[in-house]
Image (cartoon, rainbow, N blue to C red):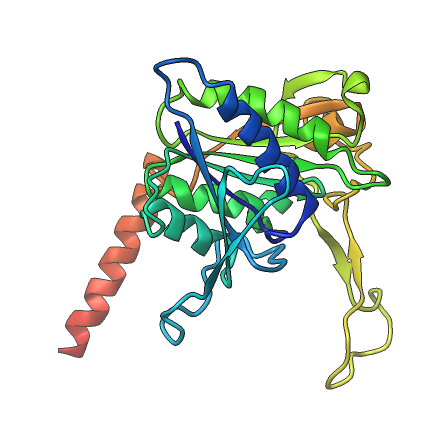
Length: 283
């Protein structure tokens, strides 16, 4: 297995260093006859919340890169790119660095990626992008707090990585780990994506003063924040609730694809007919 490691917190972030060191040790234990290789292609700075954005590659059709070393994982070739996570994933996946990966390992993100934050996460965005190119992926995040236990998340990630070796291509998994030492982790369960959001409200309260022509909108953050807010309204198997209960949450994901629900056929046919009539009327 050839692993492309990336993240959205930047190549200097502690999470990717822990992940790379865990992968380096995993490679050292490679059984005879099995191929284990890895490369890091990660943003040069923090690109959190970028989802699957690649930036304006039309006006800026070049990407600056620089070799880098991660302490304790010097055996893994590492590049820092002036690019968001999704673009790092693309460039790494298409062999730009003479390395053809099978899996994208993204993280360890500083903060949970649960609920609706999955849509906005650059950590998750990297593996969703890789899936469009045929790669499997594992996004790894740890709940934020004091003395973040990246080591716990790294150890769990390696165990999941082992299973990805035998999974079908384009298998995508989102792993969230509570901020606990390994000895206090209650276990790992399949998590369901909750409805928790990042932004709960913004601006003045209803019935307040009218908005000025310009200004700032204060944001009130929801439960799906790095530390996790109030998840009392979640089901026990929702991803945020699992973390608060002391369990790691593992969720299978699926990237963008055509919606083949036959219930939409009427809507599509009506829209096509309306467009056709409009075009004919213009002739």
